[in-house]
Length: 288
Ligand code: ZN
Image 1 (cartoon, rainbow, N blue to C red):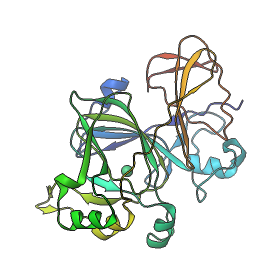
Image 2: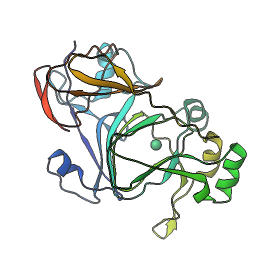
Image 3: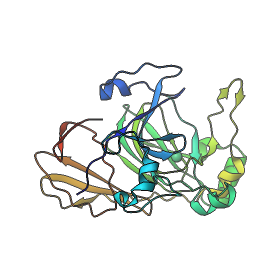
Image 4: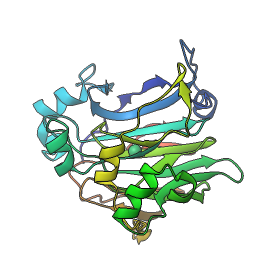
């Protein structure tokens, strides 16, 4: 067992942010411009790189650490960067409808970037809340017709959402968070996003640009839900399940009442404490 490394959270104000995170996770926060919308718990991305809080690596960035001590991470990097981002997102407004490319398309069209695979664990959702996952076009031709014809109501697949739901979002899957949803997102370390539709909203008097051609190129049709596995794991002292396993990550959820011992059998593990309090390997931890 290697030591646990605590990371400094990164805060991002967003025009659509819900500002509920300080209350939920019990910390002080003073806004400078917009409401607080995201907290990045772990990230190696250039837009926000996690800093280690635990000695002897205190003050180091996670990318410096993964390059200088690669064995701590099972030698898994993405172009010399920490390969994942894990964020909590609190949306008060509907976010624009997006799709991500896969690694091959991003490499060819986005200067060798990685594509993006991501997943959402729903921490909370408002009564009667919905989420956008997938589309209703029968085939790729119809995807193009519906997008070019702006037939958004027909095209977009909106489904009910509640606390505890889990969605795997593979490249090519249309998706969007709607207002009133709090999610824990795990994603590949990339920010290549194509905007499919923005509800015809205006920003500074103009609609935001849509990535029409790229969206049509990468959206998979017909839509097939990525099956969440919900496979029960055999862990003494905990109720544990595997939510998904894909080439970029495996996500598990565990509820511990008492003491439990985990044999992860992985190069490294990121842990988010979603509720309650206790200790981890002797170190006190609590929600958030
Ligand atoms: Zn996304």
